[in-house]
Image (cartoon, rainbow, N blue to C red; front, side, top):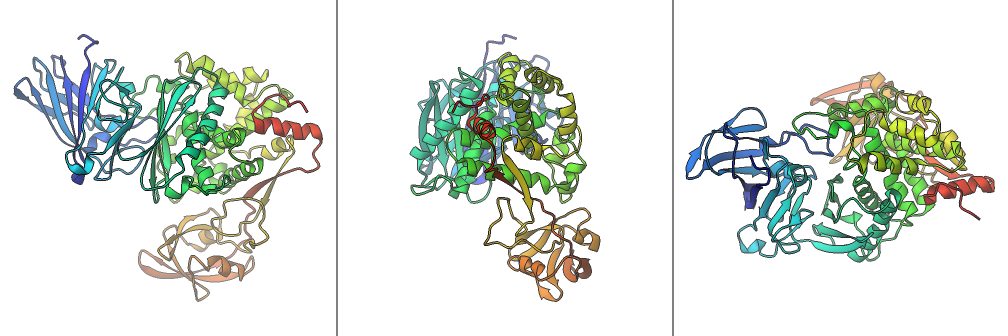
Length: 611
């Protein structure tokens, strides 16, 4: 078969009310023995088998003027009967997934990832692809636009029409947004960057684009020019609840709360806006670290099955380290604000007893079955390669700075990683990152990685942060959802602990996690129990802290609760709260050279800045 002949797709938002896309895939010269087509089982960047083929609700085929039988041969694959001439496969896809990983269509907007809609044509994945994006019928959709990083063929900017990709891998790496959105534009290193915001939010787009330009410029300068893409697009959807992002080679899909975006009077240190900028930073950093610097098992992707690697902490943890660090380095937040964020990250790790049971290496390997499938016991059995991975990256960065007297840092490792693997298009072997980090350090870092990555030992953060004149301290929580930060004189630390995490379910107090060896677990309480009363006093989400503070450690209290709609009661012996809330304080008495090392770290320089 000639590989120069394109696979052609036509996508029509056929029935927004029924959440249904209609797609036509045309193959000019199908396999003479019967063309096989399939949909991926997972999407790059989200490591869970999702089986996108389950959303295909109808599929038929025609060859010339005749119907061609289509047989499903496994959960994701169909085989069309042998035929001569052009094969035209028509199918409908149900799309009602409000996330960055799937597809959605209703009367307000359309969104899809290529893995949801574009059939992979067996034997033709390296062929060029053409896509015609059709406008939905009806006056309601007359002013809809299109936002995608796909290259245009005969479509105007932000318009419906024809788009193209060099191969299937590129085709599915450019999500598509349809609807009404506000637009922002800016350049970084001569490369056009665009922003499309959907949803009802009067955001200060000028301020947002100015801040994103600073952020993206930081990442571009870290890895070095030229940028690896010739255009970039931020697809932002504002909602009431869902939050997250997914990286792509020339774009990022982002979901945030409406209040996360800046308004005309939003202060620069606004926590919701700071969080959104961190999300943008994270996904943009992935342009290098995972989209082009990849583990060897992703070269090439096999989207039909899991691909396990022990390096997820490198690709997600290091990215999580830089996402907030870039905010302070680009001048978007203060040093104090960044240290607050770092303290919150440390807190999230210290509140997971599972860090004593699962190493970063194992957490990375188990991403498919544990990180993406959390349950009520996850905090007791697992550690996040995002959060602990970020702290491992911090530890490595500070270790490199210490042993080189400020000459080298993690920045140098990332640049070396980009040169050796990303630019070369070669996958990183399982020992590749450690080998490269040791080369940059000028010494074998095997013992460091044994402790930080391959064991469940505590990270040596207190000692390493002290080299920068930063004191790591801990305190007891003031509430069940205390995120971290220095002690607040207006808030009272909890005097006792139940050893459990609760959620407010419309006023009901539900145990979501019961921690190992805590008072709740010892008493026999379980996740999903609904707490009703403590010593005969009704428990509410608002008064639980007050009730706990009315007792002391060791007090024996009666807990009344519902389990599976049956009324029960147990006695629990309250415990002293663990000092698990981390906060960071600059050492006011640190000598000048230590203060300069701290300034160099926060500024993104390796050498101590001249005074």
